[in-house]
Length: 462
Ligand code: FAD
Image 1 (cartoon, rainbow, N blue to C red):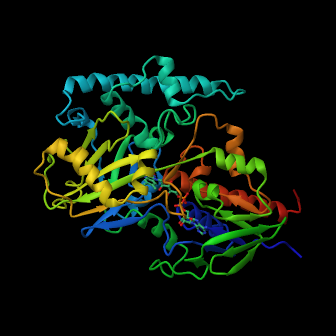
Image 2: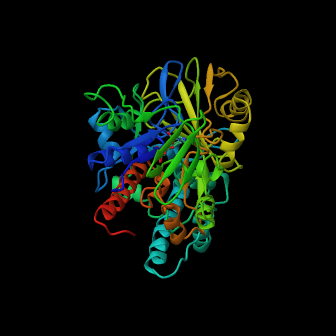
Image 3: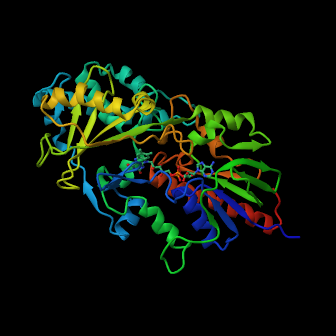
């Protein structure tokens, strides 16, 4: 009997939805999507503070480059509201540890050095990449050492954080130079960042794609093949059969599976594979990094921070690197909302996730905001701390390529195991970490699978 081509897709984030859409359009409609949560969108997820829509996950699209970013294209198509993030004025907005602004000319010279470091990173990366037979790499910090320009002072560290951690969500000590510089997302899609602030949420870009094939007349997402609240816990496989078990006791069978869960979920062993994944595969998964990026939102009764042109962002330069460093107000996006948010990453994210929101609030008020704006400022009416790391469906925010992780291991990371294919932002080497990475990953993985279907139907067994 001819082999059938049924597929179980695990996860309904951008990559899972794109994989399904690619199969559908190629005529392979025999798939189901099992999504653990009650919604489509994954790491594009809106939240709410004081009646205002905020983005707990992805927030920015890139624009102005030679190529057009798919996430931007979709955002434009559905007329999602976006706002240009103007970082040009940051040199006037960097606060000292105990309050007061750093002098503009001091900041400007520190920024010039940071830009030199950046250019050096790009050049060194090109040199390392031109040597194709070797796996030579270094960390971003390693390249700063080579240049003899390692950030030392709180100001230098804050600027370095803005250039690197704010993008990679991990420190330069960890991040691979060769695979991070130049940043393809910015080179290809543009350095202009647009901040999504729309009541429908950024997740509506994934919904918009899903509606094209999982709904009747593009209205609501409803299709018997999409199954929500299905938490996959076991995937058993043989050469041409996959059996998937979910937490609620359901069992699904197909010829193939596409697993789109984050690298953090794969590392956690939350999904048991039977038989076990081979050691080389486990090593590739566990040697890669799931970074953590946390936007802490606070709503105040009134604003006490500077507003008007050139004030949207400010930086706090503390001696402890990454201590409540990058701040943004939402007065342009939501006038009168009185919302301020601060971004933390890595160990600071882990720390705030572990402690109570009350404690984080007190820390932010006493150790940062009162130092900058005085003791008379009001308490926030509410605080929202997203917990991507503690969430068993994510275990972090997005992947980051660590120094020492080889191209060979990266190939192994996405390599299928029998009938099980892997996708997700972490499997797209060009735009990993980004929505656009997830977008292309879903398409590519589905196409790999379709190639395999065709080989079988041609009789070329592999
Ligand atoms: P996911 O969206 O994680 O989809 C996987 C799906 O699998 C999820 O829906 C999950 O619920 C589900 N799942 C997990 N476990 C199971 C299970 N056991 N059974 C069934 N289903 C399961 N990108 C940008 O481009 N710009 C940004 O500004 C940006 N900022 C970000 C900020 C934060 C805080 C975060 C978290 C991410 C950010 N990203 C940003 C990254 C971007 O959101 C992701 O790269 C992208 O959304 C990942 O899509 P995905 O399909 O690979 O994974």
